Amino acid sequence: MGHGVFFHIGACLIALALACGTAPAAGLQDRVVRMAELEIDPAQLEAYKAALKEEIETSVRVEPGVLSLSAVALKDDPAHIRILEVYADAAAYQAHLQTPHFLKYKSLTQKMVKSLKLIETDPIVLGAKGQSAK
Amino acid sequence: MGHGVFFHIGACLIALALACGTAPAAGLQDRVVRMAELEIDPAQLEAYKAALKEEIETSVRVEPGVLSLSAVALKDDPAHIRILEVYADAAAYQAHLQTPHFLKYKSLTQKMVKSLKLIETDPIVLGAKGQSAK
Picture 1 (cartoon, rainbow over the protein chains, first blue to last red):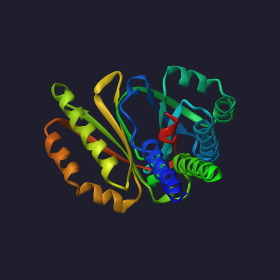
Picture 2 (cartoon, rainbow over the protein chains, first blue to last red):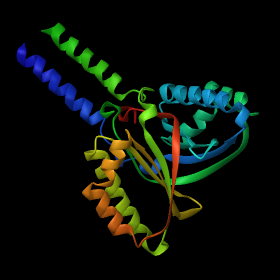
Picture 3 (cartoon, rainbow over the protein chains, first blue to last red):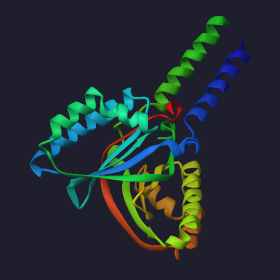
């Protein structure tokens, strides 16, 4: 019994280490990775950020193919937002565009966004700690 | 014994879910998040990317405070590289600058980098899937 417990704790730690390690290189060539550069109406910035936050949190939670969405505001110019978007593959990205939460975000924010530039990229390396290490 | 096994598998799955879920909002205000925009000498681009890949993989693996480093090349202009850097806090960032692997990368690449622009940012939301979901 005692051994059983330790075996399962050990197996658990190994599973955790495997599951939460750095991203494997395999599959990197399939990733759709791009950057969005947005300028937001300063009067609507807080409302925009709330809508964006909700959209990102929902996407990462419910869509298997949305691997990460990182949104930042430039310190020197907080109405300028950049988002680094990482999708598992092209199908995952296309599926994302049809989700109710994405369509709601687009509709809610269309009058808040003064400009939007999408920059297609090729990933070189996407190094991320497992969330356990935070 | 049977119950013990299932209990531990259950506990393991819960630990995995907690550890690998989306990043919690707590601590976001401590994060140091910035973007680097680099232009690389095209003749040395492959060597630069290899050095960058090694530096990023080592940093994420050995430094507890390096949460993620995502490097991409612009599709339309592959000698232009962008890196989104996420450190746990200012101390983690300062520690990173002193590591042997970072100093080696800086030294190796100093004649490959034609320009480097660092853009300080405030994170809005850093949404990332646990690596298990890839």
